Length: 165
Image (cartoon, rainbow, N blue to C red; front, side, top):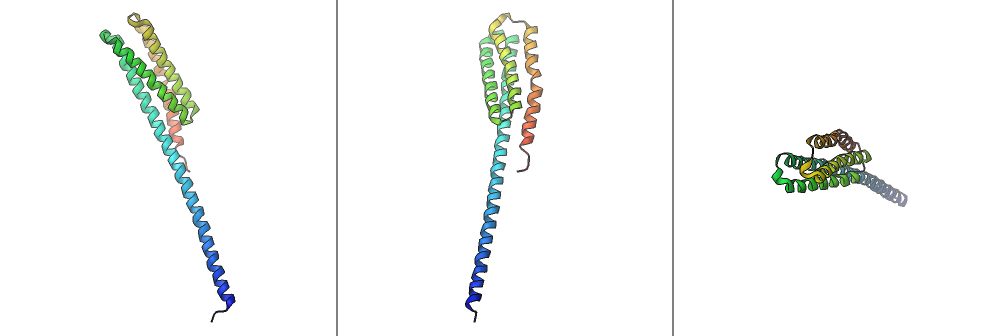
């Protein structure tokens, strides 16, 4: 027959084992939860960066359609003006998203790209039918020269979302 001391000893061992198991489970659960939160945050940032890239590409496409219409379809100037405004709105959206991404360098690159787009839009809207192709092409070239920095910063920001954690 077990003595009272043996019963107490067994109870303490069982209780201590349960306590150790509970602490270990809590530690593992907390660590897994923190990992899942970091993983979700990285995925959210990736999605935000994809959205920035898509918005910039769409805005650039709209800008290209507008400048083409100005130069080759004089009868559709009103539509071209609307496209210029739509493109600027797209660049503005991308700028806001870049700010939210937390990447200061990406934000600066997008601001530079938008600045080029604003210069193009202002030029066409100011000169109407009396624009000079050479001047317009110079502004378009300025905007296009801002793209490499955007690509570099998008790539850098996206690569940062693949870290451990």
